[in-house]
View 1 (cartoon, rainbow, N blue to C red):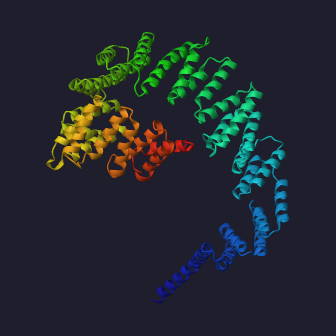
View 2: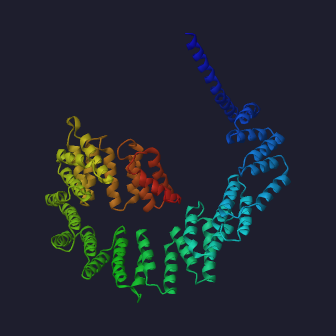
View 3: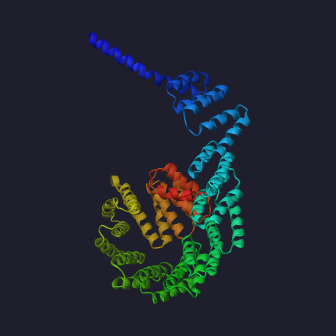
Amino acid sequence: MLQQVVLACSFLLTSLIWAQPSTNSQLASYYYQTKEYEKAILYYETLYKDDPQKTYYKALLDCYVQLTSFKKAEKLVKQRIKGHSEDFLQLDLADVYAKSGEVKKQDQIYQDIFNDLPEDPSKIIEWATIFEKRNKIDQALKIYEKGSKKIKHTYPFHIEIAELYEKKEKYELMVKSYLDLLDINDSYLSQVQASLASSNGFVKGAKQNQILREALLKKTQKHPDKIMYTDLLIWLYLKEQNYKMALLQTKAIDKRLKEEGSRVFELARLCQKNKAYDQAIEGYLYLKEKDNLSALLEQKTKTALIQTQREKLIAMPNPPKEELEAIQKAYIDRLSEVSRSNDVFTLTKELSEIEAIYLSDFQKATTRLDDLVKSNKVSKTQKAELKIQLADYLILTDQIWDASLYYAQVEKDFKYDQIGEKAKFKNAKVAFYTSEFKWARAQLDVLKGSTSKLIANDAMWLSVLITDNLQNDSLEEPLQFFAKADLYTQQRKYTKAFAYLDSITAQYPSHNLEDEILFQKYTIERLQKSYENAAGYLKKIISEHPDDILADNALFKLAELYENHLHNKEEAKNNYFAILKNYPSSVLGVEARKRYRALKGEPLSD
């Protein structure tokens, strides 16, 4: 019994011994955080004496400085310097002198550091970084100046220096530092571009852009043989979305170097991708006139030109019929010239869309697609895509069951591929259009596990829509009306679609379908390019149905309208951010974040 008591007391004593430093550390930290420095010092002095770790040292030094006990602070740092080899300690002493008014002593320490810099670029960068972290930018710049002389300019610190000048908002010097680096070696171009791209200041319309642009124009005029300056100027124009000037400079390089057009072609493709159709067309037309174009690039240019002309045309609210017919003829002529499977496939799909959707010549479009499906000119996968497109057009002409047959064929041939899932979803929509709701739901429930997030999301939405409106013996008529409206929307019979949607609202006020009706009306207005009206319906969903399944989708679509059609980047940014804030688990979150950051001018690499 006595032995057990002794063991227990021994254990308790040991615990108290070990617990005491922890308690002192916690008390010291508490008084430090509450700015009761005199009380904190009592604990930190003891703790530091027993265990001279950096955390205790930094806290004790700050306590002395806060209480203007500069002599104690100086003594603490000097003792630390004797026993440790940490580089920052000299700066701690300099800080103490600065705060105590002994500026000459501070300056002497800085001078000693400058004089004793090692002939090692990494150490020079390390010292400059230490100064920078202490917000001593001028001293950091001095480090690079002295260090560069020390290593006899064998290592350029221009990017580091430029970043420091940016912090001081001395943009002329910043730009000069970058361009001086290119003067040394044009291989640094990609590094300069990367540094500029990650800069917070170089965004469209910023003062920094103007400074860089003017400096580059002077460089290109003074050194027309140095293409790197023109390359950087083109990069800047593209960052500003000034495609006209980017194309002008790119064509100038092509002529100056007597190139074969690949540089102009890539820029024209970029313009096309970013819907700068006039510049893209100008680029392709320039290439068509070149004599030294390779055979492959010549063919690619011809195809890209009519594709861009088509994209520009169908982007118009009401494309003129004569221009549609002209582009139709251009496609037919181009198809007679190409033989590659991919070219035949792509051009046929695009031509059929012009004929079916914009010229309402369904017979010609479906015949064209059917002929290619029956030929040996395209792959099995391409035939499947053509069948889906053909089925889509059959739906437009009320040949719903023929369309279903084509969808079923693709689904059967590509049962475990995304294209098969796409066909399965479209066939489920056919069942939905024809009020076979239970069969449609069964197919949709399978597609909830699709490898395509968009298909899975669409399948889930339609399945929930059906389920919510068939439960508890509810009437099928509202859902039938909605399905009819959906079919008429697909068929571009917008007046009939609106009539059915309004019938639901009139006959069944406050029905579960209210948010879906608003979204369908948005879809109709967007298809007719009535973007203001479309935005109005989305805003109603967001304000009146924030907890429904379509709310995040409505925010995303509204952001797209503002970004691409209503020309209000700030509102677009706000709506993308609202998805991230209010619907963090949304499948649209990743894309919303990407677009939000792009609108803010942030780099997207991470």
